[in-house]
Length: 232
Image 1 (spheres, rainbow, N blue to C red):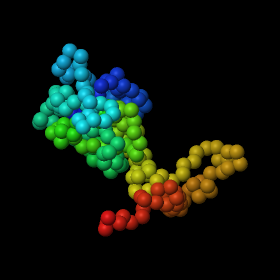
Image 2: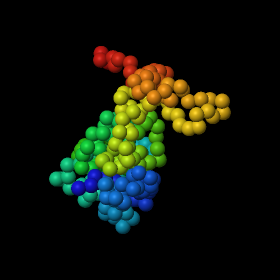
Image 3: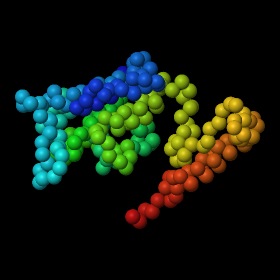
Image 4: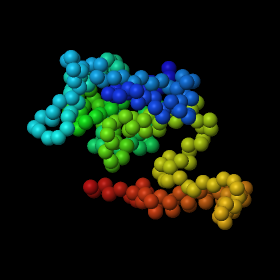
């Protein structure tokens, strides 16, 4: 069975979007994975197809209604569905490469795209949604975040990347940022490819790549390699 991604959204026309292009798009065409974009609004009960209401206790904006969203989830992911259910949210757990690999090893994923001020807390708990964040910033909706999550997952599925080892040295795979990359021409605007990369000495090349990754990580993301304070 192909990896099945179900996305619940108020804007199903946003999918597949960029996921229909490049590696992900080819994988979609080849049946390596499949995508369902489900319209939350179709599960509204009133004649106005209302999906949101004002926040309890006051405040700006609107909140997605729990009854409408729960019906949408139940219709697309019944109780026996074992796929993880994610809610794209800036307050969620950070998306990491380790988490992406865990998701890619499963049968698929259900992603709920929030809008407005967010989602009623009761449906988050009642439908066992795991809140996931793609960064410390706020988007207009969960759809762009869902694109990011699915792109990260799909590229790891067997048959998507032409070279299965091409992702082994990428950023975060070894807990470090990726080393600098070079290609021909050998000299460009007075800058040359580091000689070690042209030496043919594989041990020296591997050592150089590791050293460069460590230096770059220490400079830009020291949090990735500094010991965590377990007392906090």
